[in-house]
Image (cartoon, rainbow, N blue to C red; front, side):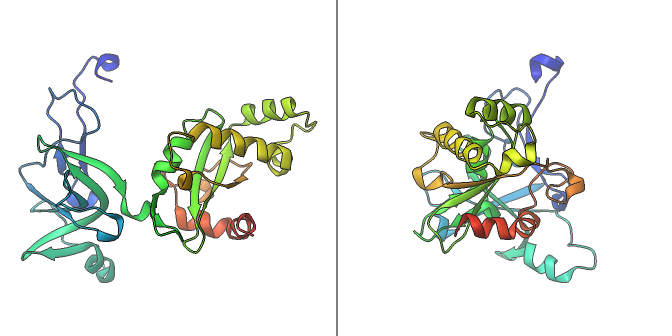
Length: 254
């Protein structure tokens, strides 16, 4: 981006609840994967999350990011319950619990490595990062949108996939499936199995075996903010997706 726009571009990290403030990388720092050190107005704690193995005592300090300082909001307007949940006290100081998992590097800069709500514990006892699974699947040119889903009582993941339409039609043609109707193609067993096989092959070597979905549902309609399945920033609304595709998900696990 520095080269394309011919201007300095720096990366930072912050939230609405911290008035946008959190961390900011130096303008001359050309390293990647970091959001920079804490701003002078902020104090950042990494809180241990034993179940997932994140601890400030790890070789690389890790944990849920808590942000304190005068820039942190007083709470949510007329929502005391949510305020008590997200704004916490540690060592007699007030912090906002971000829900993000961070890691401090040797130079004092922060790296965002996961999202607490995106971590799922399957029946085998290991934690799976749904965000990591989705990020790797999205590098496949045939996938437009994907939502990984796991049932904690099961030992494998499933995925809801919105396929890229041109890719889907080309694949159907190669498989000898006559229809060009996207909705019909998304229900065709031969097409579904081919897409699943392609995804599994694509992420093999990038994900652990337990992280690779064993079943998928192809969704013919794009997910837009109007559909209620993603935010304006196109982030997944997991609860809404789970509710909308409840019966389909149950079939994937049957």
